[in-house]
Length: 340
Image 1: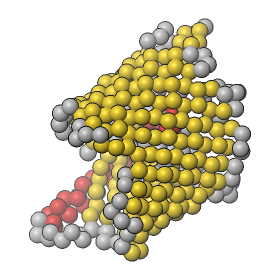
Image 2 (image 1 turned 60 degrees about the vertical axis):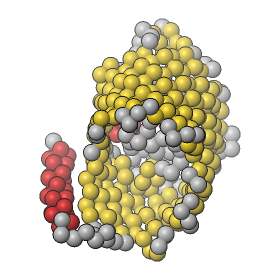
Image 3 (image 1 turned 90 degrees about the vertical axis):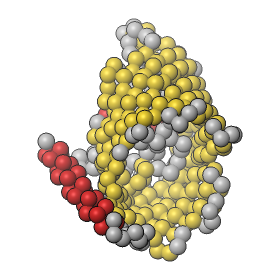
């Protein structure tokens, strides 16, 4: 109740500020006018699997049964002439999964919390906690085409705490360099672990690098407009830990827009892990191939997403009943998302 009270006070205060800014902008059309913004999403869903027990695929989000909650995401930001901040908090099961690596209770709601300063034209310094630059998918359900997420996304990272410098070298070329705490460690660097990140953007294609003590990850994220209505997204990643365990994957995201309000998309992902790196198996090597077909209907700020997914693994990792496991799983969900 205490957190809810503080949240309501924050929302009310931001609403008053926004009202004042809108009134001021009626008489001042300067593009440099500082502004507060309040935005976010709310999502909920229904999920079922075609098995005796409603087991979910081993990826983050959309992993609950029956009628389930996603998250409420509230973002307050300030954009000044040269500097600003973003305060991004999450509530609900999806939000809990998104910030699972937070140390201590005080940061368990923090999705992002950072300040930035434009030190020169095309050069921005950001300090704080921000969502990862690796991968095709993100935490926000409104920004992903598919509602459930891929194995590559689920294996992380989700967020970084540190400092980064973004360089806009031209309209089509960008560079990011950063120094971070251990992946997903929000509050502070408790174990003195330092990670280094870099991103090179070339004409809408991105090469991402994350490296640290005994860890290395190389990631490619991009896509191409094959026509006015057909887009092909691509993600490929490989990661190693201590030189002998890790994971790798590749996914294609063909998406067809059929009207102003409806689109349909497919995610085909092949994912593998070595020496029991993650959730597929506790020991040895394993792989999984999944197909996720999603429809997306948009009406104003509302998004409705029906989705059918098939997972096929090299091991019997899906507990389809109290006494039986299987190497494949079919599931269905319907998600409702509201953005503001």
